[in-house]
Amino acid sequence: MWLRHISAITILAFTLTPANALAESKPIPHQSQAQRIETYTPPDSSQIVKKLGLTEEQIAQLNQIRRQFSPLIEPLYEEWNKAQQELETLIVSADASETQVRQKYDDVEALRTEISQLQFERRMAIREILKPEQRLPFEEYIQRFADNL
Image (cartoon, rainbow, N blue to C red; front, side, top):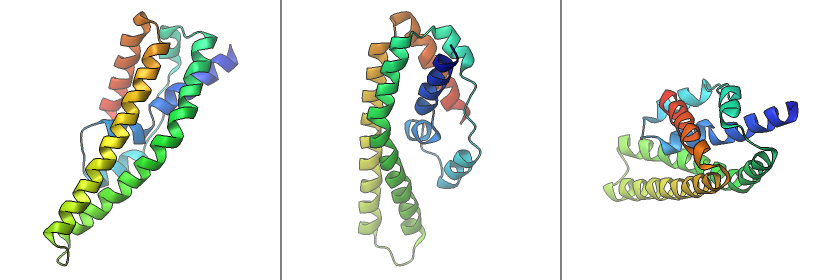
């Protein structure tokens, strides 16, 4: 049971990393992103684990999804964050042309779209693992967390 609890917390934590939640949430100023990441504390997922009643098989499958998507999403988020910082610098720069600013904006949006697509695919994979009655409580839990970031 202890191992199951730890695994489930790990699974939920990967879904709720600040990078993922911020990338999925509405755009916010860069300084707020950094502040939110610095003050991030993982939520207590023991209640949702109990509420969902995840089986050992579901936990193993969720771990597989984490191993599959995390290496794809996390580097993209770092790249997106860097591009976002560069865009902010270009916007206030006296030397940057409108073309440079627009190109950087396009880069930021392309990265955001790629991250969003991967996150959607991850959610679809999680959806397939969860029983229909587990889906709504899981999504509500994720949404409450994202709203509080």
